Length: 141
Picture (cartoon, rainbow, N blue to C red):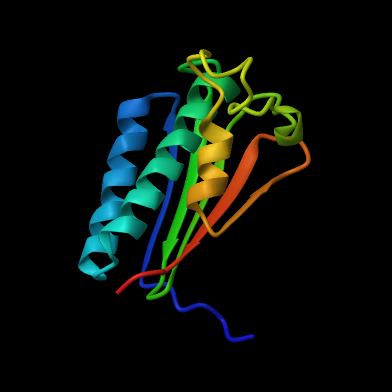
């Protein structure tokens, strides 16, 4: 298997602040536009990374400004790779209730993990549940 040639990288550690996370996401999306990724792929990455950042900041770090989120982004011609790590105690993604169940449709949250899995090509959580690795393969021209 050939080694991936990354054309852009970003490694940051930020306090639990959604605005700072958004800046990094904006950089990634701009690099995807420069690389002429299709709008659907850019939208997919935007939605998934936004959800993962919110999960890390709000649910993982409980909005604690003294806790940090690590964000590692890689972009290649045909692949986006994003890793997000929080300082929280983690969670079990398999234990998240199905947000499409009739008893969950009115709930204001709980769809992030489902959306991340739906919009990315691969998603993997570590055993502790405080680290997610997401990849998106280029789909459109």
